[in-house]
Amino acid sequence: MTDEKKPLLEPIPFHFFEEKFESYDQLLRTITQQPFVPEYAAFISMIHLAPTPILFMDDTQKILYINEAGMHLTHKNREEVIGQTLDNIHPTNLHKTDIQRIWKEGTATNGWNGTIDYQHYSGEKRTQWIQFIHFPAPQGKRPYYGLFFLDKIVVRKTDEVTAHLIYTDPVTGLANFNQFAYDSDQIEKHETIQPCAVALFRCSNIAEIAVLYSKNVRKIVTFEMVHRIQELLPEKYKFYRLSREIFCIFAAPLTDIEEFKHLLENIREQLLQPVPVADQTILMDFEIGVAHFPEETTNFCSLLEDAEICLNEHQQKKIIYYSKEMTQKFVQSLKTVAKLAPAIKNDALEMYYQPLFNHEKQIVGAEALLRWNDPELGFVPPNELIKYAEKHGHTSELAYWIFERVFKDKIYETIPNVSINIDVTQVEQPNFFKTIQHLVKKYQVVPQRIILEITEHQAFQESPIAVKVMEDLEGMGFKIALDDFGVGHSALALLGKLPAHIVKVDATFITEQSTQTTNGIIAEHIVALAKHLNLKTCCEGIESENDATLAREIHSDYMQGYLFSRPLAIHDFRQFIENFTISDE
Image (cartoon, rainbow, N blue to C red; front, top):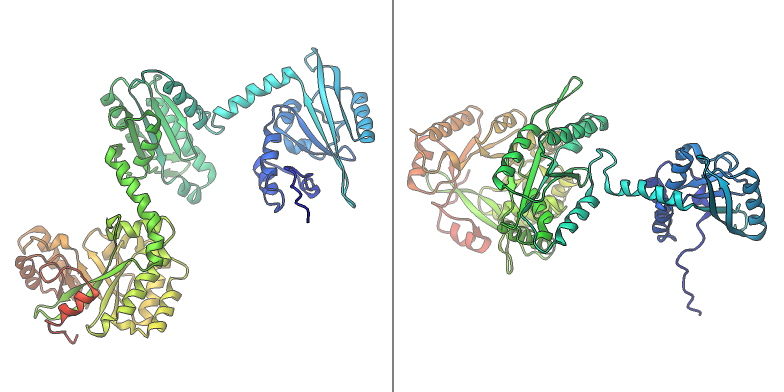
């Protein structure tokens, strides 16, 4: 057996030129899909962006491909060139006799290389170097040919055009990321770097605007955003478009940080103003992250990264300024994400249970609460755990683990019921309902003993899919509870959409309140409303005898809080309930 090395570039597959390529992206997509030629993406990219005109033709002189420089010199787009013959389209003002001589000699000898004097369109006499390459064809295929042109004057002019494209955003005309990198590199070369700042702007709903309205509306909104920023921006600051969604103001040098902050506040206020488009009024949502050197960002090279960390806070109501603690938090989040999937897979998470009591101090149920204590990370708050799971695609696995763990623990066999928190992201997963059906069957669960606590009421209200799934689960026998009731108006709206059984009054209206305080009065009316709808009620956040008294006075059915018990691990919970009477509700 011989160990033959594969050549870096084999002949380009012939069917590659059988398509007409209307864009560079389409060209790259097609060639990278070939299973045996991954190297051709770089090869074609080099040809496509080369400053010299390059053509590929078949044996009838029909043009199969022309690069950007070729189109620039012919003053024609790709659609006008592909399919034409070389006699009609050529990048330079060569005489047809010369073209045919090159063709004849090149096809006869498998190639041609030389120079030709010609008269340019401008009347100037020039010398053109040309290389003609013959690519042999396998059996049953037609050959094709490459034609490469080199004109020093043309190359120089093409380089100027290419340089402009490299450093400019083609849509807005703003300087792009390459220009930002160049500008910051020039500053970094100075022995002493003066104070400076980077402010990043991200329109977080720009994709939704395109979907809800159109791509053209998105373009109009983008131009309006650029216009509003430019109107307020002093000439001493530079403005870039770093990506489709992210824009950047680079203040270098920064002479007055307070003045800069005031400018950013004015820009933010302008960006939040509606954008009128035809008969529509478009609202933009913005996230703004700012880092300044050398106060908080002590390393100039990390200025952009620190501003990006601010954007990751996803705060739309205010401008986020970088602090060193944010980097620590960001690094911690990366570690958490890296450990999350293995923790789910290796059963490193835990379920804790917090009991619910009636006013006779009988246990009427328990709420299952997710816990993760990692040896390195320590205690990871449940809301952060769920957030990371959603962001990094672990929602289905986490939901499966939670339900399976609760069903395995079988607490519901010794107390009336167990409640499980679910959010809209879990419920919207395509396989969620079938997963629950599978687990119910696998562990012989009685659905009537399981309560599903809905959080994020607004998200549920706006999701027909989630509402339908909850209705199907209720049809299986599961009960539904509305958690954190009273926070926002959306919980009330959900009462009319979902077949709820229990309303859990948020701790805000219970902890350290009374029937004389505003929150206490609100809690009383929530309970009264629930009773009119034949729903059970539970007051959360019972931390003192005063809170328990309020729950009794407003006639809540159940109570839950640290006054009775904090959440307990499964073994501790089993021991705890041995000391109490279990309600027969």
